[in-house]
Image 1 (cartoon, rainbow, N blue to C red):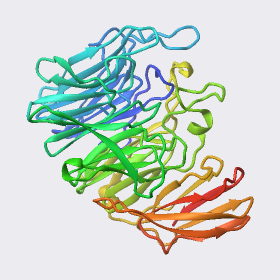
Image 2: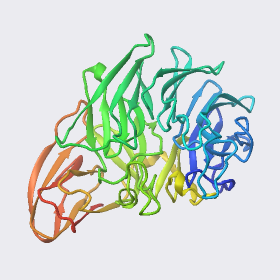
Image 3: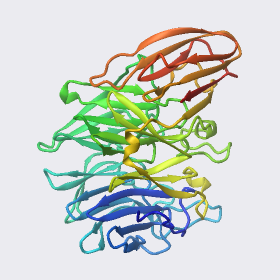
Image 4: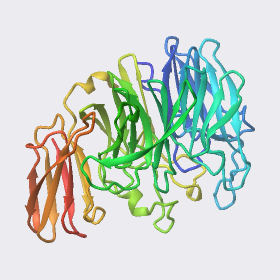
Length: 482
């Protein structure tokens, strides 16, 4: 395999403290990815092995830093369109905080037949601390032969923009911040909301033929319990539905088919464990994505980020997991370390880009990369094999009496939950699956005693989540899936 043994370059340091490999896309014989934060776009001709790199200096002077941290990439005909953000040049203050005067949002195009890169569009507000909305998603509109850009991360010029892929002319379609979108039938759905505040607030839907916009609110969770701050990570489509992967679970549906957008709780630990800074791809008719253990974090305990705290971002409830969505099944197909940054399929293989450290905020930036990046190559047959063993462990002080979990049991023969409690309690177990249309969960109650309680989950199926009747601030829960 071409990438086996490939040595990724180490260059200029990151804006946020740790970079990664983003935007993996195999198209027309070329494998593309961006190495952040060195601001290096790589293009590998898979047949010949020839590699070309681009340093984003069409945007400005070197040294450049950035590239893409949301997997903003699309392919049309012989072209690969890649977007994101870049400092050109990158300039640090003496206190190690990077200046944002030279930060640009961008879309470039790579011609796989000519082997050439062109700058299609750029935008900047040239402010010391603020920046124009990064390009976090690129969706091709085949009816109008244009690109739709999602922009949520930033302070100005947010929303969904259309971009003429020939002239580079951009136009704002809506001004509400949007991180990700996905095309379903003749409609493009976009998640709307500020991720580091309330999270996903609603969906906006664009009729690609008429140009009409509709707005759709989020429906309740199928376990009947509240869900908090569903921060949007990535989106995908299958079964004529839109799937939004958020902190705490999956929101799926299609109002044009008479289905609301229901919440399916999945890996909800009331931490920052989430499907962030990773993409979702279609494989075998289903969807493959990852929920990450440590994607964004506050480094110093006295330096809380925007709306997130040290314990929320640094409590590691479990490994990052690769999940395959084939309703009504949700299946764990891989376990990884801190985070998965990009996913792509190529010649019967799955390329899984990983990193050992999270992103950190602009006030905690370092002028060098702090993470170890890697591409793990797996066979697509893992989708059909038994899931790997995995364990999760979390302090009950984070959950209080709120519903937590959402553990997929498909493929496991001996799943169990272990509760370490300081007093007697009652536990409600919610059992459900990713049915389309959504069907309500069923529940069962258990009496738990002070000390160690082992609950055999082998009699349950699908997905299970939990709720304690009373708080146990010094208790702990451990879930073993075998």
